[in-house]
Every structure is written in structure tokens, then in C-alpha cells.
Image (tube, rainbow, N blue to C red; front, side):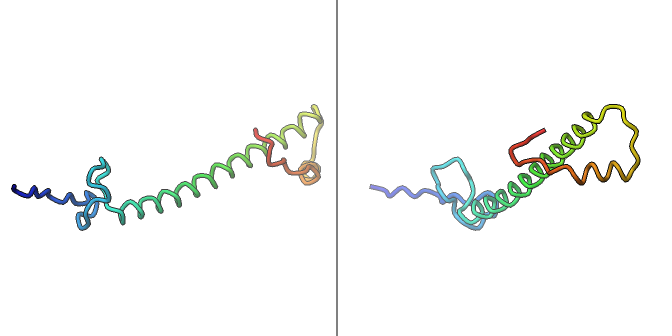
Amino acid sequence: MAATSEAVKMCSRCGNNPRADADSTNPWCTKCKAEKQKEYVEQKAAQDAAHNYALGVNAMREKIAAIFDRCGSAVFMAHEVAALIRREPAPRPDQTA
């Protein structure tokens, strides 16, 4: 009986290491997969931070607009507007725009 020798499939990203799982359709080695996962987690954290910041900005914008909606057609001076905004509490975390 002849021994069947299978060629070791190499990583398609770095080309230096064998694939993590030769039977899988993922052509990367364990090292490359770990690097990509770390990069993904960092990017996801940055995206989440930006998304949450945008939600906070929109909530505050709506909160400030609500103050002036209640005031009707009153005429304001700049220092009065600043005082109104400073007096208003920040939106709660569960409030969304």
C-alpha cells in the first residue's frame, strides 16, 4: 500500500504557516486569524464609541430643541439662551432621539 501524502495547505495571507484547519474554507493560519480578530475588536470598539457619541449628541440636540419649543415665540438674548441650556439637565442614558 502506498502512503498518501497530502500537500500541506499554507496560509493565503502570510504564506509562512500552515492553515489553522486544512479542511476549513478559511485559508488563514492561527496567527493571522488572531491578528485579524484583534484588529476587528479594536475597530468595533471605535465604531461603538463613535455611534454612542452620535446618539448622545442627537439626544442633547432634541433636549435643547424641546426647551425652545416650550418657550414659544419669545425673543431671547444670547446670555438667556446660554442660561436656559445650562439649567437643563443632560438627557438620561435611556433617552434616544
